[in-house]
Image 1: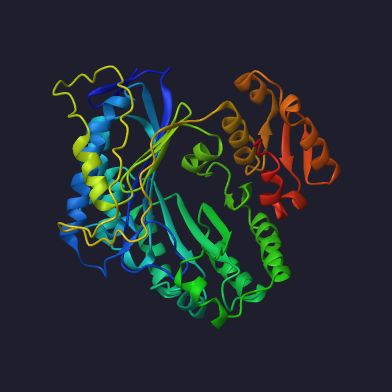
Image 2: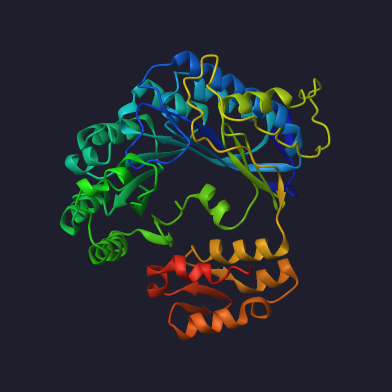
Length: 429
């Protein structure tokens, strides 16, 4: 047993990851379709009110997860580091009071460079955060401006330096390819500059133009890299980062050995995770649900949660609460400076069918370079992967998109290039 504050951790507990959604940012990037709201750097009262809601949601929800041990925590957004000083430390203190958290849990906070400050970074270290994820995207200031980022490369370098000085020894840097006005040469410069800093982890994604975003609406104004150049950047990422000692362990993620993101691997391996905050999603034991995604519905949901027990000894797990039905979107009230326009409604808990579980097992597992564990599929579902997907697998192997490697199925390099097509073949409906 591990003593963890008021809770003791048993070695046979189920594993759990926690996501905390912080929906505030100074200004939304032109490509962003995430559930986040620009504050202009103000609205401190609104942020504190939101943090109070989060604390109540965490405390009231914790008894439902008394049989789980938390192995990772991820604070994402939005821009979590925009929160007032002391807020993130308070949130983590509430989590520790409420959940069984492993002593070696991976705890990540996302940060945009313009929000870096020595005092905040030291606060995060003291609070137990041991992994930092910095959103850079590009080292070319013109490219950053075209996609609506409010920092420049120099600001990022200063933020990175401050993070190292504060004591962070596990840093991820987010990069993007296929940006407007970008070419392979400028993307190579970004890779070279970032690799020279030697962060422990690099995430590198191609820009996706999402309908409804400003960049999508303005797409005719910009010259985007063509499909061939996009593929060149994709191939360059793999070859260059591998030459600098980074191991590709997922389609878009590279790490020095031992620094693979534990939290994200939970998603790709269909582990248990619970999300707190506006619009956050969860899945435990093949049940999915989503926190309401509008401010008023979120408040009602938090208010509806049963009070946590007064005793220091948590009770047996309860049945998961159903999110109340959302009312039609209405203007936000109180001090939340949020607009409900276009916000998604809350989803009711959904028990995944066996077919849905098998689909997810395949197309999430194939994102990992080690691929899908074939014997584990049979143990989990009582049917071999060949019984369910034999024809699909044979066809994809014949096409050179999938390969068998001992007890695993994995994408080939060609399969990775058209991974969306390959994964779609595993849909059973």
